[in-house]
Length: 564
Image (cartoon, rainbow, N blue to C red):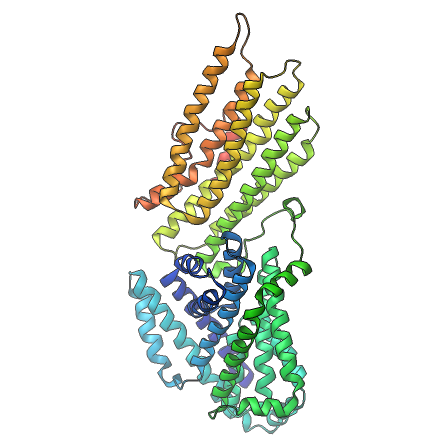
């Protein structure tokens, strides 16, 4: 029965952490990311901003992906992002501190008030606040169950002998709690279990030291796994593991004497001292590592070298299922995956144009591979966005989710345009016995440069969602359409009597125009959102006057990528 009670208490803590995380996400959402990007421009500011992030998003896996997202979506350097991560580790310890307050008797009050706000309120503010209180109530109730179970277990001679034996094996406790934190994906639940058992008299202060250290190492392991899909995630996860392991080994090497000293450094109850140890441990790591961030960043870059786009594995990189529990972060990662599609499109465009410049050298396999990657990422992205529920999303985030679905479809159509139409026109130009006029070749190079620049701007626009920039982006599309008509007219004016227009030249121009039109889709969505409009499954495409691909396979393509 005691083990069953402990298991139920762990489930309650995990459920409470989930409600707490979702409630805070409902209250702050994507604004946390925006605020961090504005604040974390200096290492010291980034460090304190990370502390706030740990308070607002008390989840090690969410913090890991938040760090990766900011590093890949903004101009922040790796050293500044490490500063955010170090600060976030300190912020995460506040939840453990809350567990040591004698609030177990008020668990029912938290659950009732929080439940009323969450279940019956329609406003996002009250609903989120109610969810936070509900989560705290579950956590306090779990701590009460653990403490009562510990007191009952103390009366059992076998249980006393078992837990007295583990006092002599701190390394085993350290490794076991690290694995437990990894399995639960929550250091708070792991440390909370130890605090409850200690308060019940079953675990000694000497054992709590490796218990807390192991739970902290579990955070590092969770971060490494959560961010393993991306290069930046692996680097941040490795940094967390190395720093926490080094600090933990130094403490464990001090033996029982150092453990006893740390647990009695500040007078207080055993659970309070353990929570203080958890906080002091992370504060010490942060203060020691903060001056060495640039050195650490260079070491991580050496240990985990950069990868080219072609070296990356096929399929999605940033669509972590763990973040589906935090919808605002999941949406941000979906946007990051669309940035990756844009990167593939840039490489695909360069490859097709390179084939033309090299007299039609066969690069079909490479182009086909890039196309298949884009389609694969788009399909995974559609499925991922479909799994993000509306429950914890604001109307603005719901609209943005539809916009991401629409834009992923537009990018897939651009890939089809490049693979089929642009590649075909380029190949015909390369095979032609008649060279393009220098003026026409210059016009095409200008359109290529403009299209590449527009892809770069679309990347920035997708990251910032800036309405003013979106309006400029739409105006540039109109300018490109006008320039397209001007270039066509110039070409016709240059023809001599009896000379036929170059259809391949016109086809290439038209491909570039259509690519730029489809790129503009995200700008229309951002402007609609900024004006208070709503997107949805029937949102318009990039250009109201731009027809979809004029073929049966393109119609099927659009139907395939329609939002579920």
